[in-house]
Length: 481
Image (cartoon, rainbow, N blue to C red; front, side):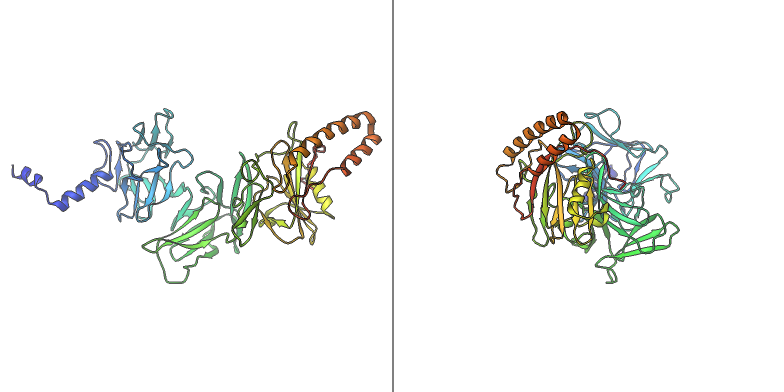
């Protein structure tokens, strides 16, 4: 009886700590009774509350926690959260969050499994291991599945499967790139370099930033160092390069992270016990990011200003992926614009040409080409294999030529008669095509050349900018030129 009475009259502080522990770990009777381990038989479902984060597991220091993280108002993802800042440093299913509902269950029986029966019967996500004894969260933020008596060699760890963030001490390898939640941008490490990519369509990629290590010897791996730098190693462990952050050599040793931002930039931060302080950024000029002004957007460096190279129905013209090859895809218009460039021309394919006309013809005759930049000083012609994103206002030695799909609804920002001109040109195109077939080689060439010289030009807001419409005739590629 005395023991019962003692339990009923528990010290308030002890009672408070007990409630906190029980609230952090939710599950069946088989769940671990501590906040630092989940053992076989654990199950949990999200509670009926509006909390941004519902913790299930905490690291020994209480800095990080693993649990259900709200995505929007109705979805959730499994996440490891930096509790002082509520910042997620790891997520399990960022591309396919599940419902915050009783139909969602997280379970552990040697394999950590997330299911949502309202979506499908099969698991939405799992660690794909079967031999684990317990789940633990380390003070590094690494979520691990381990065997009893051998917790130094995890059978699975979240450090091998990053989302958009690297924390200090976490290896960055070719097998573990970083992604943004919309899968739009990717950060990879490769043969001698690190690089940023933008995905366009289902499979097209634009490489818009690359840094080559000064002492690279083949494949690299990287580590964020707590002293404030990104350490690039060769596979034999030798140093390839140290990329310093702002805090490097300033005596600050604290928690650092490197995160791929939603705009496609790569930033590093350190925690100063109050907030995350920006410590490094890969691309300092916003106009150098392909998504800053978007599809057919025109960016003004240093002005934080965007306009449209070509207007659409709602803002700048939006376009799909693909190319101009094949039946039904070969009809196009194009826009010329002087005084524009792209920051990452050093990463683009170029061919040497003698003139702007030769550069345009190279793109016209290449059905996978979406546009070209001609540099008068070097006579380089840069070919684009994806629709233009964020061209930057620059010196007049750069001349831009950009294709538009006919019927896309695109119109120059200063062209009030573009739609009418489009209909006239289509009619003229059909007529001239019939004449071409009827008159054979010489006559066909005569009328084709005459039609070309009579194409109407429409001022688009730049002194040397024009829109021209025409059929796609020659589908021979110049990719190997």
